Image: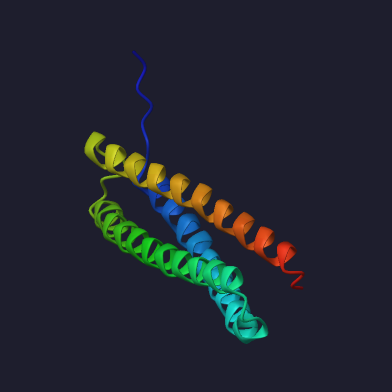
Length: 130
Protein backbone atom coordinates (compact mmCIF):
# COMPACT_ATOMS: atom_id res chain seq x y z
CA UNK A 1 0.00 0.00 0.00
CA UNK A 2 1.37 3.41 -0.96
CA UNK A 3 1.55 5.98 1.78
CA UNK A 4 1.75 9.60 0.81
CA UNK A 5 3.96 11.78 2.97
CA UNK A 6 2.30 14.98 4.10
CA UNK A 7 4.20 17.98 5.40
CA UNK A 8 3.21 19.82 8.56
CA UNK A 9 3.35 23.02 6.52
CA UNK A 10 0.67 21.65 4.17
CA UNK A 11 -1.60 20.89 7.10
CA UNK A 12 -0.92 24.35 8.54
CA UNK A 13 -1.86 26.03 5.25
CA UNK A 14 -5.09 24.08 5.06
CA UNK A 15 -5.90 25.19 8.61
CA UNK A 16 -5.28 28.81 7.63
CA UNK A 17 -7.75 28.43 4.75
CA UNK A 18 -10.35 26.79 6.96
CA UNK A 19 -10.07 29.60 9.49
CA UNK A 20 -10.58 32.20 6.77
CA UNK A 21 -13.74 30.44 5.61
CA UNK A 22 -15.03 29.99 9.14
CA UNK A 23 -14.47 33.68 9.87
CA UNK A 24 -16.36 34.58 6.69
CA UNK A 25 -19.24 32.25 7.64
CA UNK A 26 -19.44 33.76 11.12
CA UNK A 27 -19.59 37.26 9.59
CA UNK A 28 -22.31 36.15 7.20
CA UNK A 29 -24.30 34.66 10.07
CA UNK A 30 -23.94 37.95 11.97
CA UNK A 31 -25.31 39.79 8.93
CA UNK A 32 -28.26 37.40 8.79
CA UNK A 33 -28.88 37.97 12.50
CA UNK A 34 -28.81 41.72 11.90
CA UNK A 35 -31.42 41.26 9.19
CA UNK A 36 -33.59 39.28 11.61
CA UNK A 37 -33.29 42.08 14.17
CA UNK A 38 -34.42 44.58 11.55
CA UNK A 39 -37.55 42.60 10.62
CA UNK A 40 -38.63 41.18 13.98
CA UNK A 41 -41.19 43.95 14.49
CA UNK A 42 -42.60 43.88 10.95
CA UNK A 43 -45.18 41.20 11.74
CA UNK A 44 -47.05 39.84 14.72
CA UNK A 45 -48.08 36.70 12.84
CA UNK A 46 -47.39 33.69 15.06
CA UNK A 47 -45.88 31.50 12.32
CA UNK A 48 -43.58 34.33 11.21
CA UNK A 49 -42.30 34.87 14.76
CA UNK A 50 -41.79 31.14 15.34
CA UNK A 51 -39.78 30.77 12.12
CA UNK A 52 -37.78 33.89 12.92
CA UNK A 53 -36.95 32.54 16.40
CA UNK A 54 -35.89 29.19 14.91
CA UNK A 55 -33.57 30.96 12.48
CA UNK A 56 -32.08 33.05 15.29
CA UNK A 57 -31.51 29.93 17.40
CA UNK A 58 -29.88 28.16 14.46
CA UNK A 59 -27.57 31.14 13.99
CA UNK A 60 -26.51 30.95 17.62
CA UNK A 61 -25.88 27.21 17.33
CA UNK A 62 -23.84 27.61 14.14
CA UNK A 63 -21.74 30.39 15.60
CA UNK A 64 -20.97 28.22 18.62
CA UNK A 65 -20.02 25.28 16.38
CA UNK A 66 -17.79 27.57 14.32
CA UNK A 67 -16.12 28.87 17.49
CA UNK A 68 -15.45 25.33 18.76
CA UNK A 69 -14.12 24.27 15.38
CA UNK A 70 -11.82 27.30 15.23
CA UNK A 71 -10.55 26.50 18.73
CA UNK A 72 -9.84 22.91 17.68
CA UNK A 73 -8.05 24.05 14.53
CA UNK A 74 -5.97 26.53 16.52
CA UNK A 75 -4.90 23.83 18.98
CA UNK A 76 -4.00 21.45 16.16
CA UNK A 77 -2.18 24.16 14.25
CA UNK A 78 0.05 25.02 17.21
CA UNK A 79 1.32 21.44 17.06
CA UNK A 80 2.11 21.76 13.35
CA UNK A 81 3.96 25.01 13.91
CA UNK A 82 5.92 23.50 16.79
CA UNK A 83 6.85 20.53 14.57
CA UNK A 84 7.96 22.89 11.81
CA UNK A 85 10.10 24.89 14.27
CA UNK A 86 11.70 21.64 15.44
CA UNK A 87 12.40 20.71 11.80
CA UNK A 88 9.94 17.82 11.74
CA UNK A 89 8.59 18.44 8.27
CA UNK A 90 6.68 15.19 7.78
CA UNK A 91 3.40 14.97 9.70
CA UNK A 92 2.84 11.94 11.91
CA UNK A 93 0.04 9.48 11.22
CA UNK A 94 -1.69 10.66 14.39
CA UNK A 95 -1.55 14.29 13.23
CA UNK A 96 -2.93 13.31 9.84
CA UNK A 97 -5.77 11.32 11.44
CA UNK A 98 -6.66 14.26 13.70
CA UNK A 99 -6.50 16.63 10.74
CA UNK A 100 -8.83 14.37 8.75
CA UNK A 101 -11.29 14.31 11.67
CA UNK A 102 -11.31 18.09 11.72
CA UNK A 103 -11.75 18.13 7.94
CA UNK A 104 -14.86 15.97 8.38
CA UNK A 105 -16.20 18.42 10.98
CA UNK A 106 -15.39 21.33 8.65
CA UNK A 107 -17.17 19.65 5.73
CA UNK A 108 -20.19 18.89 7.92
CA UNK A 109 -20.35 22.50 9.11
CA UNK A 110 -20.10 23.65 5.48
CA UNK A 111 -23.13 21.51 4.59
CA UNK A 112 -25.05 22.74 7.63
CA UNK A 113 -24.16 26.35 6.85
CA UNK A 114 -25.41 25.90 3.27
CA UNK A 115 -28.64 24.45 4.67
CA UNK A 116 -29.03 27.40 7.04
CA UNK A 117 -28.68 29.82 4.13
CA UNK A 118 -31.38 27.89 2.23
CA UNK A 119 -33.69 28.23 5.23
CA UNK A 120 -33.07 31.96 5.28
CA UNK A 121 -33.75 32.22 1.54
CA UNK A 122 -37.00 30.28 1.96
CA UNK A 123 -38.03 32.47 4.90
CA UNK A 124 -37.21 35.70 3.07
CA UNK A 125 -39.07 34.53 -0.03
CA UNK A 126 -42.08 33.32 1.93
CA UNK A 127 -42.48 36.65 3.72
CA UNK A 128 -41.34 38.79 0.77
CA UNK A 129 -38.31 40.20 2.59
CA UNK A 130 -35.49 41.79 0.62
